[in-house]
Image (cartoon, rainbow, N blue to C red):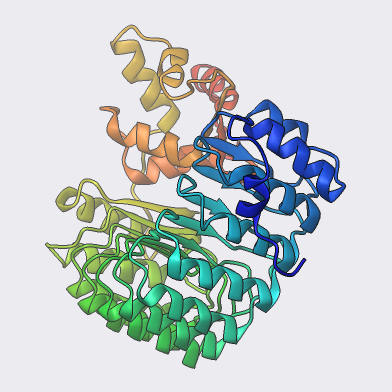
Length: 435
């Protein structure tokens, strides 16, 4: 409806009218059924109305009610088919409501018209700190320019989610320019877009000079080696980024080598996600080597969880962790080429059992400290970390061997019911290395 203003609609009601009463009147006005969840949860700071099928009329009724609300700081409206019309009602409401700080409009088919409404709001609003615009909104290249222009001078929005959209080459250029100019964003999610080649390079040019971004998700973009080269260059100069997600980006060992050039000069990045790229043990070795040879590195987590490594890698990781004890590398397991026959090792389950026997502890006591919920299943990463931090005399090779035996289906979860079976067999002298 052209000319609709929720503030004018509210003025027609009494000053003493409650938000619930205003909402019920608004629903009657626009001809929609009131959302009972909204009425039941008035007065709370978070209002989760995701998947309620509001549509533009429902968005209009909600906008009228929220003009005077002083409680809701987090408004979640994902997957409501609001369209640009519904978004316009809500964004008009934000001209009067300064309580809402976090807004989720993901999956609402907003299109370019909706993007225009949002960017106009971002130029004026003084309360929004985070906004999610992920998926099924149909934003295209020119919309990236609108967001870039709006955020160039916005110093309040700290978190922005533009994942699952259609930004490509020119989109990368506009978003890179946004990073170069913006001095507020700390978290940016651009996963599942099409930033590659020139778009990836242009984006990285902005990252290179950005001074505030801490968390960046670029997974599922197809950056490739050209993008990895540009990222490596950016990391030489960027000194604020602490988390970088590059999962599923078609990066090869060559690309990792380029990325490592930047890691050599970087002293702020703590977490690097590189799972499901085209890496082998060669790329894995390069990553650990750069940590080992860079005393000032801040890297604490490297995820290459699909890469099968060999004993040479495990040995290098052991040496590196002596100098960088906080380093955690997630990899698929040990099974790559081994140049020489590995030394004979004690069965890791027997090592654990001997350790517990000496201290008069039960196997159950060991796992209970990790498994707070009592499900007898523990995430592999938590299990690995717990064993590493314990005083049990297991090297990394033994730990990975144990994980492979307790996570038989490679689900990412250690099922320690197998540990009791393995212990029983070990005590009876049976060999079950294949369990």
